[in-house]
Length: 178
Image 1 (cartoon, rainbow, N blue to C red):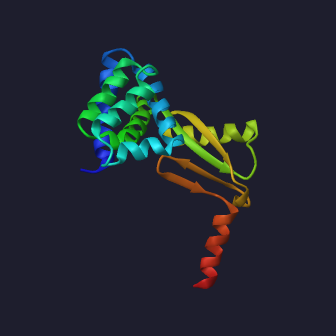
Image 2 (cartoon, helix red, strand yellow):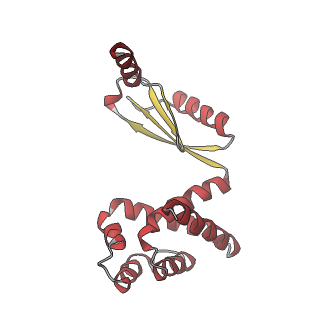
Image 3 (cartoon, rainbow, N blue to C red):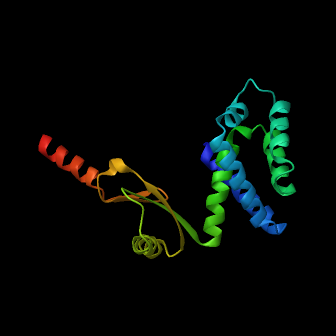
């Protein structure tokens, strides 16, 4: 079974448990903390994914890092996942939980990449585009890429609108070659 399917199932179960225990918001913050920690600390995920590192050691790492910082429900899930030898996909589970939480709350995450920082007017236009396309409340992440030349790239989940000059020049180049 693929990692994303397994991670999605764990995430859905965790959402249901968190709703049942009335700690959904706390668990959401814990999953953000875990994902952020895993993204910034490559060694953590290397240790959790390593077949050489013993199960007890992985459990000890999670305990030292998270037991006092997260909700007991979140820590219990970390323990269950570790006991089932699925700690190597904890980052995927956290990412899937965040996606499921956003879906549950009606939030759509989108990323816009431009050559310069967005003005308030442009930010509103991009937010309106995403809201119209998805019908959800928008959390817009902004990135600046000087290599873009001009235009923008807008990403919504697995969809991408590339209205950059760089992509248009590449298309033109391909047409000239053929």
